[in-house]
Image 1 (cartoon, rainbow, N blue to C red):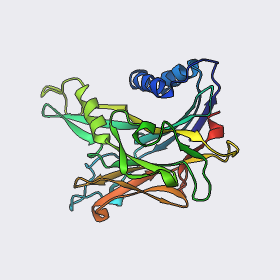
Image 2 (image 1 turned 90 degrees about the vertical axis):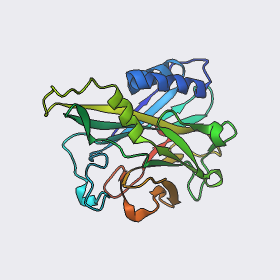
Image 3 (image 1 turned 135 degrees about the horizontal axis):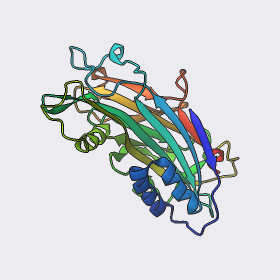
Image 4 (image 1 turned 60 degrees about the vertical axis):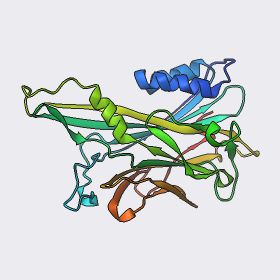
Amino acid sequence: MGATVSTARSSESSNIKGDMKKANEIRDKKGIEAATDFLEDNGYRTGSKEFTKSIKLGVNEANTSGSVGTQKIEDPQDGGITVELLGVQEGFNDRVGIFVETSYDYRVKCLRGRWNNKSSGADPNDAVGIAWNSFQNEFFELAFGGGENAMSTPKHSEWNEDVHDPSRGRTGFNIDDKEAFLDWEDSLPNCTVYKGLDEEEEDEVYGTNCGLYLEPVGDWDPEDRVINVAYTHAWANISINPSVSFSSDGPALEFSPDWQVNDSTITTSDDGTNLEMSQAEII
């Protein structure tokens, strides 16, 4: 796990939604460092934390029943899913953006003129839950009037309105990790019958960076204003829609019917602690 905090140079920029759209385009082409450089050059403060879960991706590890058993989820020496929390605050007010960035290590192997999946996502079974208030305290409220106006859903992600509950400070997103894989697969060179059977391609592929915009409320210390995030990667042999549940410990993910789904949640530690970022880590 790594963490960085940067202080921006002064700027008159205050269009955080427009600037984040530009930053997303930069991130897609040049990486997160180029995107944060752009934001800082335009007067924003940024903070980031990175978490990596080493797991095999996709349905290729299925057992005979068609679902993926936990015994089949193996830790490769490298690869898996990387989740980065990116916090952004405008230089001239307290408005904050919190974004969940994902990257996946995808692999394919050339066989009989076709790329065959060795590591890929399954149709959209991944989900993100974000809680910006605790059950006892209100730290933030949604910016821009709330609802869809407060959400950021670039490619491969969509806002889950069914679990949206602003009165309790929580919302969720669905992530299409399979579509991210297909976009990457389409960019690969042709796999021909003349190529060796052992030829492989692999890369770390950018998924999405869904998130939301918040306004601080009350007189809380920035260290106390903590945003909790849960990211869950799941496998299933049917089409499912994950939903977000919340407890006193923060957001969690639920899947229905759960008996056909196995999942792996990315956390900060072995005891299941949620991903989190405080306002102090941004400013």
